[in-house]
Length: 305
Image 1 (cartoon, rainbow, N blue to C red):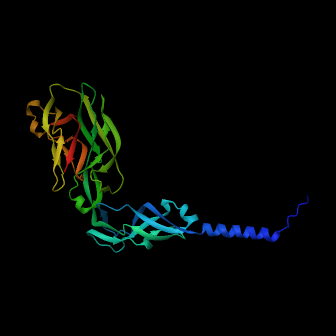
Image 2: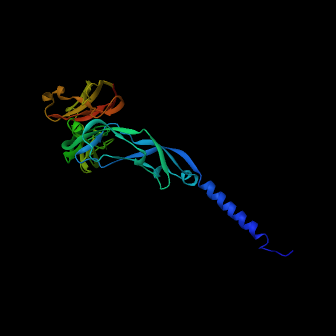
Image 3: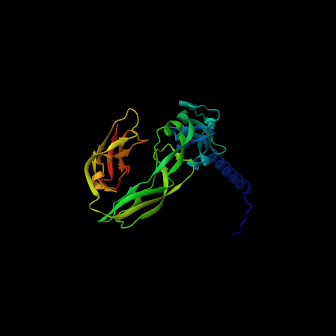
C-alpha cells in the first residue's frame, strides 16, 4: 500500500495544535505551595549596633505560580529579607515581614508569610581586651606532673554587645592534651570567647606550653573534697554542681610548709550560660607558690535554673 504522508493533513495539523495548546494550558495552570524553613536574611545592620538574643532564623512562605515552576521550586531559591537600615538600639524591637520582602524566582507570587513580623534586640557594640586562659585536658604519665602552663598571646581583643563585654572575663583555648605525657607539651590551638555572643576581633591562635616534670613526692600535695565555686552566673539564676567538690593535686614550688592550701580554689565558669544542664570543665587558677598537676574529676555536671 502506498504511503501518503499528506493524506488528512488538516486533521494532523489540528491534532498537533490541540496537543500543543493542551500542554501550554496544563503547564501554565496556577498552583499554590507552602515552603517551610525559608531563611531570614538581616541586611544593613547600622554601624555600631549588633543583633543579640533570640533571633527568627526561618519563616514559612506560601507561593503561587505555574505548576511547572512551583513544582521545581527549591527552598534555597526563596529568602525573606529584613532591612535594618535606620534602625536604632532598643530592646525587643518589632519589624514587619511583608510579602514584597520575600525574594522568589521571577513569575512566582508570594501570598503570605508566617510569622508576619520578627522581633529582635539591637545593642551598641564594642571591643574589650581579655586574658587568654589555656585549657589543659588529661593527666601526665604516672610519676610525672604538670608544673606550669604558659600561653602566647596572653590577651586578645573580643568584640560584641557592650552588655556582654561588661561581664566577659576571658577567652579560652582549645584543649591541649597532656594524657600520658612524660615531657613538656607545646601545641598551637585556636582561641575562642567563653561567651557565644562575643567573637574575636580577628581570628587568633595561641601557643600553649605545658611543663611536665618528674613528680616530687615531698612537694606534691593532694587536697580532697575541695568545693567547686560558681563564677559568672547570670543574674536571677541558681546553679548546682555534681559533684560539688573535687580532688586537686598540686605541686608546691616553694617549701611545702609555706604552702597555703586555702589558696587552691577550683571553679567553673558559667558566663553566657542560661537555664539548662551542662558539662563544664573545672579550673584552678595557679596561685603563688604552687602549680596544679591534676583535678579529679576534670569536669562536673552543672544545672542552672
